[in-house]
Image (cartoon, rainbow, N blue to C red):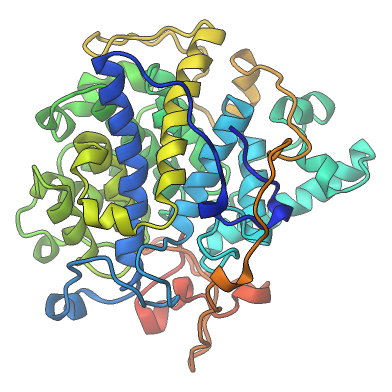
Length: 479
């Protein structure tokens, strides 16, 4: 199981990841179906919503999405996905390559996607929110300073480091690159690989779900939205019924998973059932870029359309606005609950790089189990009440305490090892989006009225990214 070097320019559908040994036993087979369902659900939701990204609810009332279709802001083919899935696959590739949670390596891989199109459906980064972009720009700057301090020769050398390497040689290095108050949905949209890898140890899964957000989205609302949603995904994989997942007491009944760090009051409001409104849009449910709106919208669609992945994901999309991300967030939980087998087959058939996504799910299931065994982590049964033995309390420097569970694995010169990959085919790459007549600023998915909307001045090839145009498209700074 190897991923290619970002410089190899290998497209996702060309990556021969291979398959791990087959799971044995009924319970493991169910878990695998749920894990693959979560990843496929994320990607299917992303691809379905991409064709109408930034469309308002009023437009979708008249022209609702009903099938996988081409077009949209980026001119994608039916089944192709955007930044939501690319970043989730980057996160998964880090967990699988490092065989542990390594926030430094995660940022390296996000940078590869940003700069080289690593794990992009088109071979280049065409869709990125401003908060994510600002964080990655800062990470690149910190890497350059790290190269000087450690006397490294080039970027490849600094990319090979693990978080343990970095912290042992430069203890003051901060991998968390978010500016204050960043509460967009750009971390929640990519979350799934973390709870899928760590579901056997719920407290660890919840902690790392939050830590996975903190590298780019440092606001407590964004971190705690990921902690809460990560817990729901874990519970779904472990076979908890729908009534448990939507229970207004879920948080209190699973408090041992969350340790001593209480959820932000706005996330607590959602956990207490604020999303349970029959007339969703008319009662204020919105598919916006602010993480609280996004979490509430995804959970509304899951709760409202019990029993149908299809109806729920279409409802999430037809809320309008940040359609691909709302649906991708929905798909993570709904896919974990319903399983891959209950996602419409015609959508999965049209999904770009579906075999890679399935295989990544299989490897997350396999390597997650190996991690627990190799690190003597307790594996709780699906029906056992979990009491936290977690020695890594949530804090804003969670990466500092991770050495107690990490193994110092050597990061290879490239993920490809000795595997031969097909030549990069430029004909498969989509054309860059057409320029709009209206100047656009790069901005993040967000509609938190308490935050400002800073524009990025570093436009490069992304100067026409509509993830930004708050005036013309109804999107304010997020992502």
